[in-house]
Length: 327
Image (tube, rainbow, N blue to C red; front, side, top):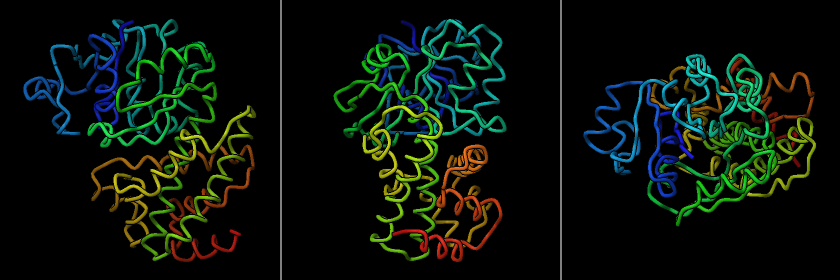
């Protein structure tokens, strides 16, 4: 099976490192030819995870996304959610017979769809040929080969088990799952909760309150996931709770960092400019908030973050009101 990576960021780079443990070579789409040229010359991604070196003789790079897709059977999408629609719009080849795994930690902008939903609707890929990767897995730690755990989801559990082997390495352990929607929504919502945690940190709330915040966050996630896809799931599994915890607590978390800056009084634009990285929770907040206008689930933390980011409400006042909702 020919495997392709679509994306050039830190997460795409970490996934390429993992997959190359288990296949002889990979196809890799990177949009800019100058990045490819430098990557080949220095044997690492010039912009991300500079300590992760590659055997570039085993990588077939291309700036042409259609050429990469045509030459591949399984495509791993690892593009930040704000840019994924732009990249997918460049695809002109038939993808209906391809297998696609989304490693995107967000939803399709303006469509308010999960990535797997979008691929099914617009590229006619059967749902049983679509998958998702989730779990507590910072790209930086994977690149450093620190032990990490991934959950690989597909409605066809046999495929989930098979695809799990692709990501299994001495430092990455994998678990198959059939809960595609739950894992995708968890991957979006955990970034929102990390922003909330960062805001609270800057407002001098302590670890005791953060524990209460994240406990309530998990209740929100359970309610929303059940409303969207009522199948059996254990929300305490690492693909749900584990991902929330690492994103909310870790110093590697760009969403937590973004939240801290908002809590310090930065505007959204100023925080994004200074970080020079994509905090996907900013976009995920709006996506989940809009999705909930149809499901009407009680999501006070999502609502609070939305009011702070999009309606420019006082973080101090909004969080103070939020504390009254918790037990």
